[in-house]
Length: 95
Picture 1 (cartoon, rainbow, N blue to C red):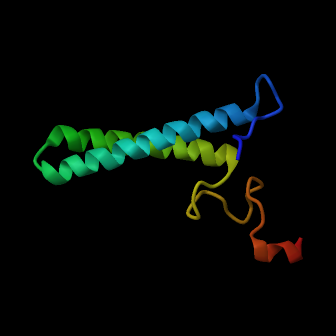
Picture 2: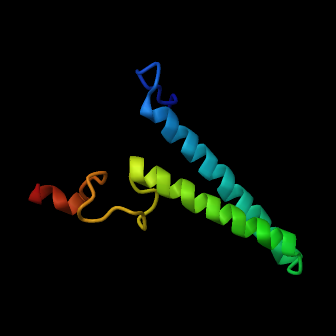
């Protein structure tokens, strides 16, 4: 399957979405790696500080993504009054 290419050539909102998702993936990888490091070296305060910093950064980026593009996980920010969320499959009959 080919990678999706957006038909808009300049200023596409997909570009920002892709950038945020890439950054989230990179941060998720770093979180996993530093967590494994802390498992081996639990006394390393520098690693623990770094983990706290990147978790905070991830939360900000995830919130930005979800506010613009919808939920990343089933625990995202969408609620009943959100216009960014598509209806769940069982809600189609009500619409």
